[in-house]
Image 1 (cartoon, each protein chain N blue to C red):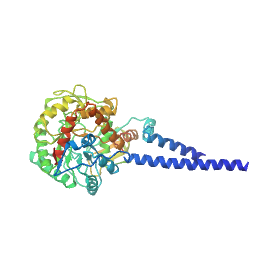
Image 2: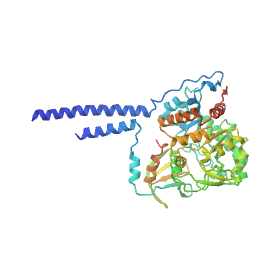
Image 3: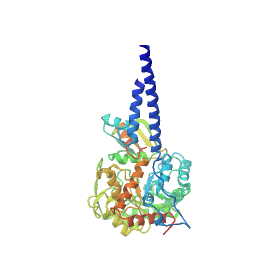
Image 4: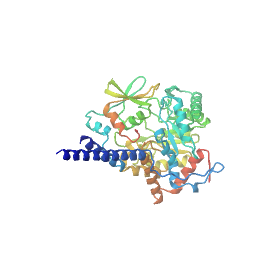
Length: 109
Length: 362
């Protein structure tokens, strides 16, 4: 019974997706439930700098090789994600709220 | 009692089989759709003696040539099917991955993709295996030229054709390393030398972000912000106009030495048109999925139409959804058919693009 209800729900969601009816995805739900303020910190060789332009931060973070879970304490607050290409002197630290905001952008696969 | 229970179980089982079949079927349909299977193919192009006849291209093919997307291999078949103008590559872990990706994209294409990178200032998509000197450490024209030449040669070897560099914003307050050091005149001279070096190796250089003040700290969040442009912001472009083969236009609303009349520069004919009068090269937009630009217009369709209508030659759209990319081409094609965007202007841009790719155009 439970299995059938779950399958019916899945089939319904797949049908909506096929006809481009958007329902909040996981990232969006997490983003909305998270009460923190989105945070992006630009890491330069000798300083950390808060990027208030979050959309630009997301695009720059997307250009890096990968984003991985890494908790860091910065002067601006705690961050949970690091996006950086290895060997690069520049990186981006994001808190969960900021990261989930980025994952909703069209350029984030 | 037993029969009723058995009947219920049978019903549940039948329902289970129906539902699982539906889930599998719909799941497959969604995957196939996501891979761009339902996007119709464009007719093959005829290239004779390295010459392309514009009249033989469909309107959709022309518009597609004006688009640069992110070159993720997961979208390989769709981007090829759409016959897009270019792919932009982000950082990767190994050099072979760049080569492999570029080869896959260029394979069997009648009109090759432009392949672009942001190898600029202190941003280096090859940092995992090829360090580079940040431009803030370059102070002489000779060094700037050598840097351009060496980076151009490397990009060429990998198969790139366009580099979105040099950055000529005068005051990089955010990264503090993307522009050459010095005042407007020095930045102009160093950027010119870098451009010459890069282009000598066959790479199209792109001065950005016109008309300036893009790397100044501000709080745009979800709105497009305005900046006052001074004459000095335009100086590097005046220096580069006769040399550089590409200019990238930003999303800023500007006033002062140049005025976008309350619209984002990239969608303002006042900005792009004036630039075109002084400058014969390719005009690229900054990435159009940036929220600032998207929030200026009530719908994505209006973003698409306005950036084409403004006169840009190449539109950067890093959206990853193949269906949406196809829809953008359709939306713009419709706008051309109803006369909102001039067909002549599209033809002129495509002509420029094809010539920059090394074709003769009839």
